[in-house]
View 1: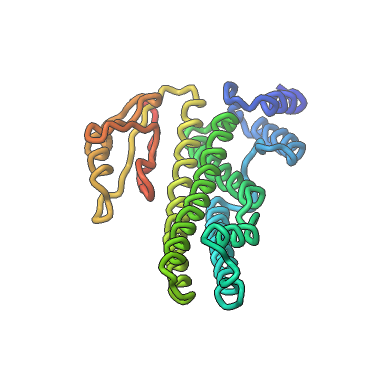
View 2: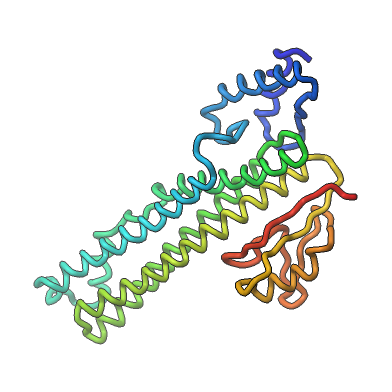
Length: 299
């Protein structure tokens, strides 16, 4: 196969990216160089594609993770500051006397803050974050099995939507708790200083939750990417799970470690916890879970 044929072959795989075909780099040095050159030519053509053929770029997953967490926390801080400012303007002016009831107060607040935590701001960040960690996991499988794999577009899109729904859900829950907090404060005629403190406590909890989302969902995307790559390899393989054992390890992870750490299972089987009755394809098994998926050739 010459370089032109290689380029044609790679481009045809780029069109479907379903992971059903695999290109193995040739072992001969001359052909390996030719393969690399062909790969780079196709990669340069695919810069505008939604899923890059070769997912490596200048931003490491670690940097993407830090940026996503920073941006997510920044959105929360920005929202908190804007709410405090609006409440301050209402409480420290004649506007409070003009407000008929809580519904009127809430309506004024939401009208002024509408769009602050909009989907269009968050969705691109969630998509990039999810894709980077999915590809990071797939790269681990590429290294382990000396093959090149392609992202499963359907699975990756599902993960992106799933993570976006989590962030949207957090946003909605924040709004619901804020409404309850302000409604109670309004009924009890609390001064602005107490209202401000309660709003600050509410957003502190959300910042803790946002950090947990970043840790948990980066691990999920990475483990699913590794599993997808292992399945594409075509090699008979098995999987197991590795859990750090220390004072932070929860009862669930201890049970699963005792059950699966020294046991190999088929890639399509699920990790099952007899106590809760729940099953998982890969870790994480719970928020902030430190479990790592391990795939290996069957002995």
